[in-house]
Length: 318
Image (cartoon, rainbow, N blue to C red):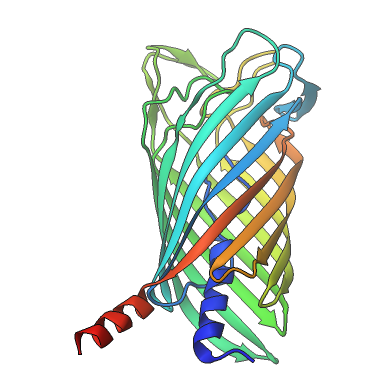
């Protein structure tokens, strides 16, 4: 039987491991699970992932990508989560992205992408019908950390916009079974590109591109225990505006990019104290102006208990 400290540390470890989900264009971080980091605990670790596609949707028309072959993306991300209190967490994510095409003359890109910072707050919690209900408010901001070229899709490493994210989320758990639902609104800044004119549905004599905002629905359900978390995920990303890729044309930063995907997250706590591993996979079921990508990610995380260190220092000072 675990004592109070051991239970808190293990539960915090579960929170840390679910920080990783499917890497999508707008975000490489998961403030999107229904768990919280305990006060004065810090979890951090690296993740690595790979995704690729050969087929894509040109508007609503699905076709293959013979000119470029298989387009692949590799990501390496540093992620962290600190418990300010048991009801307020701060999270960060910093990815390094590398893209590649197996055919054609377009060279891939690589570099540090966007830094993401988020605050996650438990707004309400109550024991209902034998289970625990929590509602969350999450606010985030992301900004590019390098001068990568956004006007190079589908091989750009990002869209280079500054994003403000607001999310409302609810999580219900009864015994070891749980379900989580969230809705996210992403407000995106305009971006500048390295040309003075461009065409969308009309000619623009400017290097500034107005970016449409976006929204995201995320549903997840599964099993949580002290050593294993397994969850199925349904994700729907919708661009609130934009336009379709023209027939036989190139994608553009302000295209309408919609995607519906499913995935699976699995976390395992190793016998080593504070060390866990996580893995997940995802595949795109349908989309608009996006590739039909399938990918996977894996990570290793470690928890540091700053509450314990402060207590030890006080005892040493006596």
